[in-house]
Structures are given as structure tokens and as C-alpha cells.
Image (cartoon, rainbow, N blue to C red; front, side, top):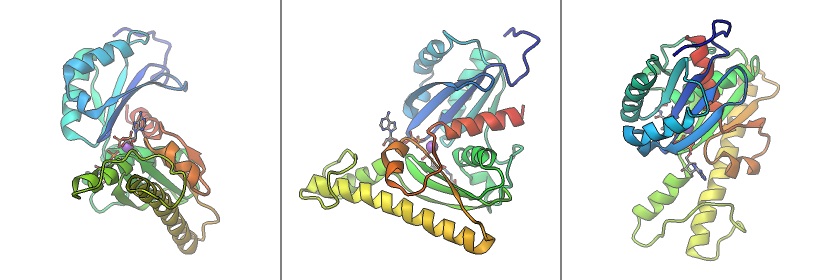
Length: 268
Ligand SMILES: Nc1ncnc2c1ncn2[C@@H]1O[C@H](COP(=O)(O)OP(=O)(O)O)[C@@H](O)[C@H]1O
Ligand SMILES: CC(C)(COP(=O)(O)O)[C@@H](O)C(=O)NCCC(=O)O
Ligand SMILES: [K+]
């Protein structure tokens, strides 16, 4: 792949892939411009034939990448995907993990099991809110909370089932409950089976997240004397839920991708 001599790595195109348990998102970053983004079902990313089509479409309008990073929580898809990308672009693929140079201190008992998406989200959160405590919430297949203190030290997190997982589990683990599409209910109290499920999951998740954010912020204020705590919300369901939450500093569905790109540039 030829590139002009004058461009620094930050200017050259970087391909960043976020493989979640539901959605795989591919982004092309160049300089500090907003990335060009394509999303596919993660089940597709394991199918190299289908992925060739997605990648050829993606790179029809863009120069080939000078650097590639994969942020994956699905090992099989990451293996297939990186082999495909390395063969297509002859560029080594960086896999996001705890052994990389990080912009924060990862204090986790099992760093090798820490989700790459949570790592990338913490990297971006620490970059965005340097010097402040931050709670990063990813409302995706699962819902995760990750907490950094003002000194940029990881303080811990929480993992809970995501919205579709809850709706799916109610249907698959009971004899009579239907699978319900979750959107904002018309009222708090349901007056039908479908309304009760929709309201139970939607408002249950809102109150769980709100309550946990408040409890975490109280702990940081009590233990660290923090004056205020930033809250960053991301994930496929962030735009559904975040508007119902109290003080959210920022909603950014691309936060994991931006953190992956930051880690790629820090580890080039
Ligand atoms: N295009 C979409 N439109 C509406 N909801 C979506 C879309 N893509 C994902 N979602 C919702 O987001 C959830 C997945 O979150 P996401 O963060 O995309 O996945 P992952 O956990 O794989 O990173 C899905 O369960 C679904 O509820
Ligand atoms: C918790 C997760 C499944 C969330 O992934 P997602 O919802 O994005 O698919 C992922 O971060 C993961 O596989 N974590 C590994 C365990 C850990 O983070 O400690
Ligand atoms: K995610």
C-alpha cells in the first residue's frame, strides 16, 4: 500500500473494528475527522465471504488502511476477521488487550479476562475526562459499568444483562411469555402482558442504571472527596435509555471505536 511521505501515522487511514456479541462496527479514521462507519451483525463477521463484500464497499471510497486494530469480545470472530484483514491489506492487526500501553491504570484482578470493549471505553473515557472521575456505561448485548477515578486509576465495574437478553430470557425461560420488542412504554404500569414486559424491562433498566450511577458517584464522592462525576453512555441501546437518566455528560455510540483508535495510535 503506497502512501505519501508527508503524512504522519495520525493522518493516514486507520481501520478500527469493534466486534461485540451482537454488532460488529467497522470504522475508518483519518486524522481527527469523524470516522466513516459501517455496522454488521457479528454473526456475519465470521463469514469471510460476506465480509469481503462489506470491506470492498467500505474501501471503494477510501484509501487502504495503514494500520488496523480489532477490539473484540468474540474470540472466534476476531480470529477469522484478523486473518481476513491481514490477507486483504498486508497490514498487521493490533488486538486490543490489557498488555497494551494504556492511558489509564488498569487495576483488575484478572486483566486477561477484562473485555476489550471495556478497555477501549476506559481508554477513551480517561482521555476525554482527564483529571475527573468518570462512570462509563455501555448499554449493549450486556450492560457494563466501568469507573475511573480522578487520578485515572480503574476502580472497578459491573456487568448485567442487556435489554434484548432480558426480553429473550423471559420468552425462552417461561411457558407463556411472548418475545417483546423493547421501546419506551406509554405508561409505567402495563395493562397487558406485552405492556407489562415492555415496561418491566424498559423502566427496570432505567432505574437500575440510574440507581447504580448514583451509588457509584456517592462512593467516589465519599471515598475520594470527588466534587462531581462525569457519566459517559454508549452502546446500541444508549439513545433509547440515556434520555431517561439524570445527569449524563455525553452519549456517544462510537466511544469504543474512538478508544480503540486511541489505543492503536498509542501502540503503533
Ligand atoms: N440498528 C439498530 N437499531 C436499533 N437497535 C439496535 C441496532 N443495533 C443494535 N441495537 C440494539 O443494541 C443492542 C446491541 O448493542 P450493541 O452495543 O450494538 O452491541 P454489542 O453488545 O454487540 O456491542 C441490541 O440488542 C439491540 O437492542
Ligand atoms: C461484558 C461483555 C460481554 C460486554 O460485551 P458486549 O455487550 O459489548 O457484547 C464483554 O465486555 C466481555 O466479554 N467481558 C469479559 C469479562 C470482563 O469484562 O471481565
Ligand atoms: K459494546
